[in-house]
Length: 261
Image (tube, rainbow, N blue to C red; front, side, top):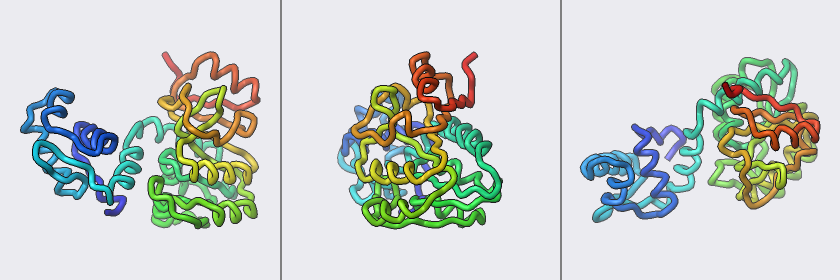
């Protein structure tokens, strides 16, 4: 399955896939009640997802295919909060100047930035297969840093990646995280990604965090960066007074793409 394969027709089908990813097996009867639609509608959705090779039909329901589950999970993340991610990417682009060398982590928010990076005369450093494909298609010069392949993020991590990044010094690094709070900083549950992001951040002249509001005031397993390691935080909604106070105390430039009315 390639990154172009996931062409889910509705938000309902996204919900079915998310349930299958978390529970492995889903029942048509349960999905019908949860989604508020007829069982026949759920069957049609499952048939369409099965035709794409995303689910396997079983008696009374469906199950996720092991060989595709990690890639499906990554692609579903890419389709979540896309409007917020696109707005954050546009704000991030305003911080980039012609001639910069920018480094992008393997997050789906950084991928949104990769898609519009051709608007600047820059070069990039990436560890994400998806970002590399986008930059190659749009003509942005880039360096792909390799290592051990981490399937859930379609990225490269590990000792080789970290050793290479310690020798590189991009002007600006753009990264995201699964969660953020003033108490734990920027956090992520995937330890291989944590190490890669930490090395990326420490290589940079300026560190910019890209974080949609669904991740704020949450925590995940391991800290990627503390507040004093970040220079700019871009988010899509005005954060709480606690967040604003914490970023101000850490001398972080806070950029909000959509101020609350």
